[in-house]
Image 1: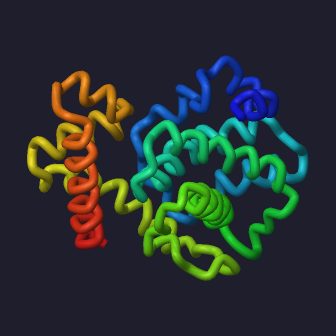
Image 2: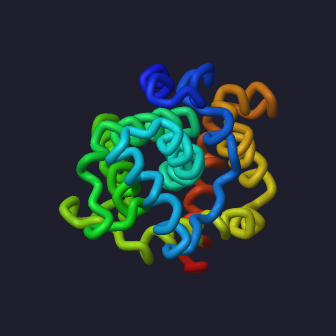
Amino acid sequence: MLNKISDISPRLKGAPAAVHPAALQKEVTPLAPPKAEISQQTLWMLEVRDQRDRAAFANLFDFFAPRLKGFVMRSGTPPNQAEEIVQEVMLAVWRKAEQFDPHRAPVSAWIYQIARNRQIDHLRRENRPVPEELREDPGTEPDASQILAVDQEAAHLKEALSSLKPDQREIIEQAYFGELSHQDISSKTGLPLGTIKSRIRLGLERLRHELKGMR
């Protein structure tokens, strides 16, 4: 998948499998306010749509990849799989660029809708339940306020982490920020794999509860 992305933009060549180091390894950061986004990100999208501009696509990738990764991981998707989904989403953005209409939806809403659909596809293939926040009419597109609300959750993530028990917080930070596998964490801490999975599950449940209270 990465090779296809690299073929689109020279700036993405040479990246390790399923991750662009300049984008996916960034800390999740807030989206710009809707007006700022329309003036810049929508312009890049129109250049991709109308001119097949590779540099504009690279700019879109750098801007949206870390945000999409955070969006996908928020439902409990592991980092490596989240990166794969982001790659699929951005490839779809390139391929479907002619379908983008700024009069119907902002570029962020359009891209997040693609991400939402891809994430649901992955969850269903793995027979995993679809989180409540993803259960909406697939024919509707999220508006700018919905996108901003999602991003505000990411901005509060560090604050929410402080509410966790130290043992849960440490393991979640290793899994989702250090991007270690469950087995790697088990080897590093000496804890049984079942304990690692249990602490991550309970920690994520607590995080979701805290983040909902911050909306």
